[in-house]
Image (cartoon, rainbow over all chains, first blue to last red; front, side, top):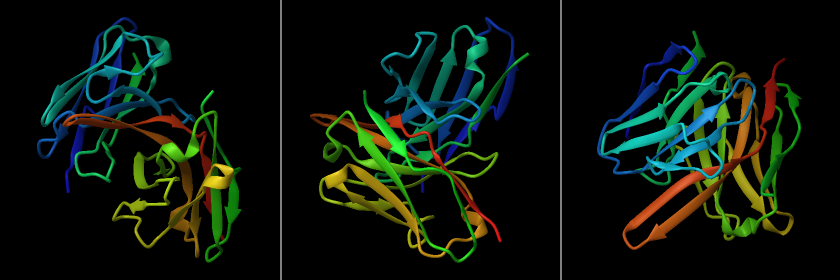
Length: 108
Length: 125
C-alpha cells in the first residue's frame, strides 16, 4: 500500500506569513494528489486537485506543486480564516483514496 | 447548486443496526461516484469506500471491507452507509462526498469536490 506522510503535523504562524506543508508519498504517484481544508466542526473542502490546480472559488493565496513522491501546499499570506487542518489525499492505487494524517495550522 | 444532504445524528447501542443516507441535489446523481469518509473524534480522515450510482459498482477500503455496506437508490438520488451490528469503535462523523473524474488521453484526475455536512454516529451502551 502507498503510504502518505505530511509535515509538519502542526504549525503556528503569524498573519501574513508564508506557510508551506509537505506531503510525501512512499512511491511515485505522479500528479494523483489533492489537498483539502477542514475547519473545526466543518466538513472538508477541496482546495487543490491534481497537485496544482486551484478549485473554483478558492482564493489564489492557496497553491500546490509537486509530482512523483514530494508535494507542497502553500498559503502565500496566512489569514485568520485559514485556521484549519489541511489534508493531502493520494489516489494512485485506485479505487483507494488515502488521506495524509493532516497538518493543523494555527495563528501565532 | 450542487449539494449532498446527509441524514441526522444517530445514537445507538452496540449490536444495533444502522443505515445513514446522503441525498444529492442539483446535478445528475447517477453520473458521479459517491465516496464515504470516517472521522473519529479528534482524528484524521479515513476513506471508507465508493459507489457508482449508475450501476451500483462498489469498492471498499480494505480497512472497511466486511465492516460496512455501501448502497444506493438512484431513483431517489440517495446513497447509503450501513452497519449490521455496531460497535463502540464505529462512533464518529461520517461524510459523503461526490467524486469528480476528468480524463483526456492518458491523463486523468479524481477528486472530491462536494461534501455533505456529515452524520454523527454515537455508539454507546
